[in-house]
Amino acid sequence: MQCGFMGLGVSSSVWGSGSVGVGRGLVFGEELNAIGDRATIDTDNRLAVDSVGNSVYSCGVGDVPLQHHNGEITMNAQQMIAAARKSGGAFACLHRYESSTETIATYYLRLGVTRAYTLEQSIQWADRVNFNELSDITGIDADTCRAGVDEQVASWRKSLGGLQRADNFDTVATAPSGRRIFSIKTDNDGNPLPDNGLYLTAIREDSVVHVQGKARPGPKSDIAKVKANIRRMAPIGSFRTYNLRADNFDSFTFGKDTLTPSDIISVVASLTA
Image 1: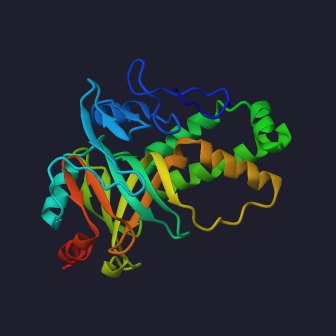
Image 2: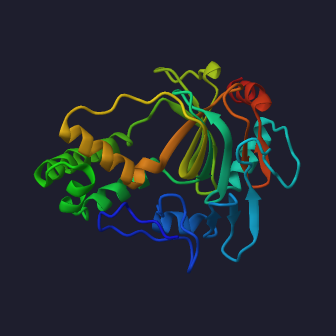
């Protein structure tokens, strides 16, 4: 199975020759290839496989517990930082994470990719959108589709420029490339907010929903509907920040290491002491 960008005339790569498609087919070229072995996800068995076919780990689905090959169940801050430094470009699994809408899902993630890069890729992707095909998908006329794409690209360019400024997150663990993986939220003066937990930055490759939560209100105007569709289909639609707290996930496995809810309070306390 090879997945493209939902019929908009923009094809995407897959991991390796003849491999199984990954998630929505989103592959971000040189940045990912430079930071880890190319790999596939077997979406039936939830197994990450490296470029020569060796299994990396499997993620539990439904009520099946997460399988992890070294059995480690606790982690301190220094172990987490060390694990992150080895994990750039690797697959990871966030098991049974509960979002703010009360959806509970298991996410298959790729670490070590920046928001700036996905914004750049999204802008390039939008330049190749076929507006007639987008019109067929959305049921909205091609001229409105073109206007919506133009507005969304302008917003992405503004966001890309804003990334030059500091955000309200303090990076506490990075990939070997220096790209953010874990961070702590701060107030406007740069003081850490430990009660907010730990933040994880990643690309979502695939997911399995265990409990469907509340639906968010949809856009009203046609141009807003076009922009919402474009955001979902573009590379930036897979970029996520997950807020890990002691009560909203089962485990996070990356490389040979596992972070559990019982680790969060002590890890954050150590990082913000």
